[in-house]
Image 1 (cartoon, one colour):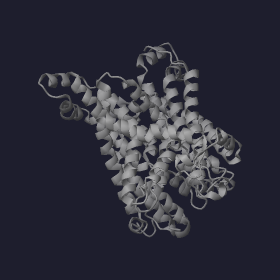
Image 2 (cartoon, chains in turn purple, cyan; image 1 turned 90 degrees about the horizontal axis):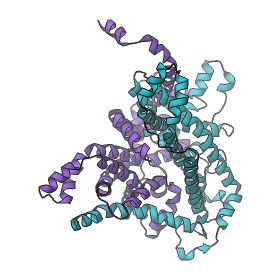
Image 3 (cartoon, helix red, strand yellow; image 1 turned 45 degrees about the vertical axis):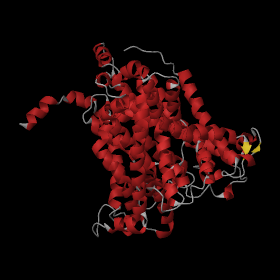
Image 4 (cartoon, chains in turn red, yellow; image 1 turned 180 degrees about the horizontal axis):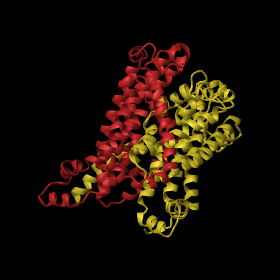
Length: 292
Length: 301
């Protein structure tokens, strides 16, 4: 039964015409899978097996201890928890800061409204090299890099700061598409505007808020340059920078399996998010990208 | 109305304050700083010595910076052509009516969500590894011993190895932008032209490509913005400090201001600021040039 349905739905002539397309995409996909799959496999092998080219054969079984070792002895746990903290706190703060701004920009006509919007759009194109030196100078003069706690707070402020323009513009587009009839109805019932925002508009904007928060989380998780400059010791480093210093020290330890395990630990959180939410992420890219 | 005014101020203030602190003030200070000799990046503005455009002159005559600019230009142009053509090709295939579109799209975009450090490590330690790497073992099993013996990360091949790996990760993003542009083109145009006997290639040349103008502009702008920030990949491909094969202006700036002093002749954060201003200018110039060259004629469809 399955076969008859299958043949009825499929037009082999059309599929044959599309064959080159399938071939190109499939080759690309296979390469991607091999790239990540091999590293994943190697993270369960031993360094000696990797060098003998037996990473995919597991002659001595799965070595979960690579993960245990990377997690405990190589500081990866600290980097991981740091990143988790930075990324989640920044994502939440970004919504609290940008959603109200985006709402006001999308709903009210006032002096400078368009200037603000345009500056935010322009800021998305500002390279990090143009802002990093004054930030570093001021922060050092204020003595904020001396204590771990101030460094952590500072990093969160910076992560929030660099993502404010994108988040605001993204949410602004989202609010503009929400009908204003809800607000009008609530206003007639005597609900004050600020309450309308928190009680009615923010919940309505939830899909947009979720999408942009995923982006912010991933962006902060993967951020490298700023973290490299401001996270000046192993206790405050996020994963990207931590992984780099680990790979650097690999030259002396020679623990390749452990390094691949660390790569997978860094890779997994964003990958898992993507596994479940790829459609949402892709929709968000195309919505945001066309604005830029 | 008065109530709205307080609301506007209260709601906008946090975002604007942080925006000014992280963007406006630093940008202005970078521009000013680039005109001064600044002993140390942390020194007070009253210790800066005004030198006019001297920093820019020094930069342009520094051979390491020239190499960095040349590398960036190659990454931008060659990488840009490769990435944008592949991205357009993939986007066209995705929208040609193939099955599993969402699956292909999701896998091709995936490298973009991986930390660049992790992705670069995968390439460096697996694909390009001279002992057990993908290239070496593949070429060996095909009997191509000459190709198998190449060390892809030696100084002759490093730049291309780097560029290739970088491009692989970038295709997905630009593909999505192209793809959303193609999805917006009304299907009737393709149907009508199919009835008139147009081939897929003709359709691409006369319908898809011309209607994608604004999307191409977006892609070129985005590509330029990311190219200017080319840093992580260089750092991972060259663990030694100043490697002429991989250095880019941002790496140069990092070495100049924060890095190992042995490669840099003069301690002057003003030079770093000048690099920043030049990079900002590059983005602006590319943006205006693409706007000039690719005219936005408001097509109605």
